[in-house]
Amino acid sequence: MSKISRSRAKVSPSVRLLKVVGIHAPVEVRRHPTARRLTLRVSRTRRAVILTMPRGSDFREADRFLSRSLEWVRERLECVPEPAPFIDGATVPLRGVPHKIVFTGETRRGTVVRVESSEGRRMPALHVFGLEEHAPRRLKDWLTAEAARDLDARVAHHARALGVRARRITMRDQKSRWGSCSSAGQLSFSWRLVLAPPFVLDYVAAHEVAHLLEMNHGPRFWRTVAKALPDYEEAKAWLHIHGLDLYRYDVEE
Image (tube, rainbow, N blue to C red; front, side):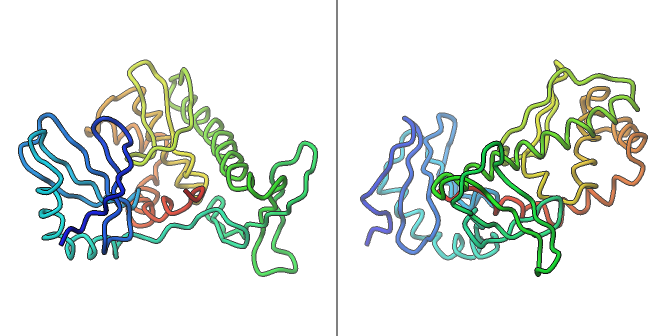
């Protein structure tokens, strides 16, 4: 019996999204010109199952392959943190501190989000203003702007210390890396760094600024990072242990 639903959403000429009986996560089927066999992996950052097919394979063959691997997929999905969408009453970390999300439903000129301290309540809160249907996106935009502000300051600090200059800083919704540095001196960062404790954001800023001098991860690169941030190992370890959890938070799809 086929495990693949007949409902197939075509994302691009080479990618289809499928609903699969027994798997509570989207399945992306990708045709790749250089693939020689069917392969399967679970993306821990996107909570998605990715099935890669050679050009000559068909969906019946993919169906049989996926059917044989259902238990393997379920076991790995169980290890992936559950999504934590931006909804009223949910909790999201801001600079490492849990905050309660409050959708006010009110419109306040010039104010998108107001941060309230934890005085008299169990935890601080993020009051999001505007229509409730727009509140999740407004909160994400606000968090992205806060991340940009923090990273601008820390990049400038480390660039001065190392005697370099970043040409441009951009925020992205990256799922494979926390930051990147181009050969032209442009730095990009994940907005989710504002969810982590400040010393973690500071480390990623120092890491990418160091790439302006050393475009590699060799010994000289790590000596440069240590020059900018001597205790960087603590932040590096934090990301290794807790970084995946930050990908739980996002606007509900």
